[in-house]
Structures are given as structure tokens and as C-alpha cells.
Image (cartoon, rainbow, N blue to C red; front, top):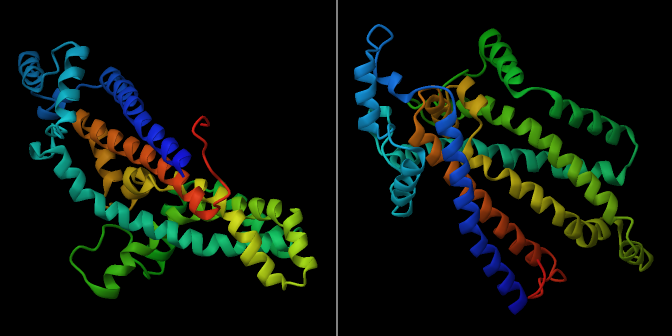
Length: 322
């Protein structure tokens, strides 16, 4: 247990330099990208160079990039993500808090829906390898990965929303309650879930195929245990270990948001916020979203390592291992 604790401490300490490096790279890329944030404050007819220069000075954009970075990092360490250039100059953290919950809702629902479908499909495909079910699941998985999300979203909007009128095609339905509000979630959740179903199903199939060929599974069968008991009490537990990593890598989507999906469905989440911030060259929002998403991903990696041990106690981390 001490080895595991030492490993977790080392991984936690590594978060600091990784976040520092991430912040430097993102800050540099954002400020070197084409576009001028000052143009968001003036019209095309009134872009007086003196006015633009004054706006840049007010925003601190006329200072050298290293100076801007040090000031921004100093505020960030104190929990100050700055004020948005646009969006009525709201604090960035306030904007992110307002937009986080809608994104978390549809991303969490899409992951739950994907797991509910993909895990049984992957298990059945593995236990009936090369059967009609397995081949159908394989073709469906490849199609799910190949279909562009924007195309699927527009197709569902056109067919289910416009032609059939079964489901609303945009917004979160802020003015409605109950079942009517739930309808607004269907299309974005389904679009987000399709590639996840394909990914999870293929990984679950591969993991189960590897496990059911192990000697301990054959030994369990030779002892007279039923097939269901062998699969779910012996094979499945170990097959879920690599799935933890796959699922963990998808969780940061809950904060980063599906930019394309949220934009198409006018969903008021972090994805749409990021898209609007990019169009307006709103540096504080872009940087805030990136840093929070990066930190979330690093923390999740540590949590995934801990879950490894909980799923299979045989896995341990000695003090000298990485």
C-alpha cells in the first residue's frame, strides 16, 4: 500500500510542471494566432488605428508576450482567470461555471448511453466471435466511427426535427419543463454517443477476447462453473481494466464540450462558449477553458490509476516503478 501511495504522490506532483508547460504552449499559440481581439470592439467602418491601439493598451495586449504571460499566470495562481474581452466583460470563471452544467449533462448522458449499449454488445461479440452478431457489431462500429458528427447532427435535425417534427432541433429548452424539456436532450446526446458506442464496443470486444483465452478462465470452466459465472465473475472483471483507461480518456469531454455538436444544436455549454470565444478572439476565455480541461485530464489520469488497483488488487505500484 505504501508503494501505491508513493506512486500517487509522485503522479500528483507531476501535475504542476505539466500544467505549467501546457499554459506556456497554449498562451503562446493563442497570442500568435491570426486575428486581433481589439476588432471585436469596433465596427468595420470605424476601425480607427488610434482607437484600436487604445483598446489594445486597455487590454494589455501592447505589452511583450512574456510580460503578458507572467501577469496572467500570477493572476491564475490566485484563482483569477481574468475578465472576458467580450460577453459584457464578465469574469471568465463565472462564464465557465454558467456554461459547465449544460455540457456536463449531455456529455454524462452520452457516456452512460454508450456504456449501456457498448458493454453488452462487446461481450456478446467476443463470446460469439465471427458470428452474425459479431460481424454486424463490427460493421456498425466502423460506421459509427466513420460518420462525421456534424453530418449526423444535421441529418437527424432534418429528418427527426424538420420532416417528422418529433424532436426539437436546437437550444436547451430553457422555457419548458418535464418531458417536453427532455426532448431537447435526445438529439445532442445521441450524436455524441454514436462514436463512443463504437469505441467502447470495439475495446470491450478486444479485451474480452484476450481474457477468455487465459488459463484461469479455462480452469474455471474445468471446475464445472457455468458459462455465465465464468464470464461475469472471472473474465469480465479483468476485461474491464483496459476499459477504465478508455472511459477515463473520454471524461474530459464533459468539460471541454463537443464544440461542433453544441454549435449545431445551439446548446449553451462550454463547447459553444469556446466556439464563440475563438470567433471573437477572446483570449481569457480560450485560455481558461484550455487550462481547466488540461487540469481535469491530468487529475482523471491519476484517478484511473487508483481505479486500476480497486478493480484488480494484484496490480500494485512499487516505490521505484513508474
